[in-house]
Length: 298
Ligand code: 13P
Image 1 (spheres, rainbow, N blue to C red):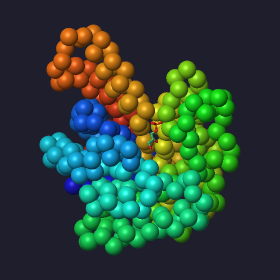
Image 2 (cartoon, rainbow, N blue to C red):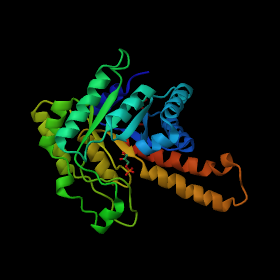
Image 3 (cartoon, rainbow, N blue to C red):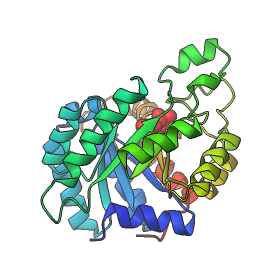
Image 4 (tube, helix red, strand yellow):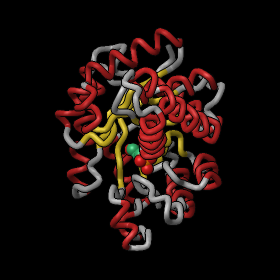
């Protein structure tokens, strides 16, 4: 099977993006993978530290392995928002294809130091593995707290956005494979308020500075849920090759599970009442795959 690096570079050249879809339970994986299969798309399954602790690192790897084999699809696994070198190392050794070091809340020099350590660790893996592993870094600050943003009328502070010069300096020093940038989106959605717009101007500045310095820069967009479709399409044109979706999957799964349990109040067979939430996850993921243009790219 071709590596994740191959697909990320292909996405960059052809101007589409690969979706990272987070899960914390096998039922969600069923919906996500059914969507990928239906649309013949490469996908990344994502687990945050919390999600990975609930599922189990080795269990997540086993799920990826068996679904890769069964579907023949390029299905990859990323440890999302890892906060320490040690945890990322454990994920890589368990068999993850990709790790994201989130040092965005640290002073930049500390972020650089730990990111370098992760990249060096990946480079020193045995041959056959070192060429395939992908390291994601992050510069700029993301909010996880939709309610705080709600109180602040969803104004993302200018100082939290990725500074293009800092992004380039970080890339030069760490050599991470892909870079998550803060360009106006946030984790989570609040459907009662306006969707977060992507700061395309900032994305353009990052892109232009990279081009001026002849650095190829593969960008990652976090907080993909609830983001206007036009903004997503424009961001892909500006070099975003991976887009993370979590909240929309949680929402599709949980709200439809509630409905399903209400409608079938006497049903106690999980594989019966779980079918509706699984189908809802599949529909949500199919819509994203089409939006990102990764259909028929497997
Ligand atoms: P959302 O929850 O907004 O989709 O963001 C997901 C994410 O960025 C995971 O890293």
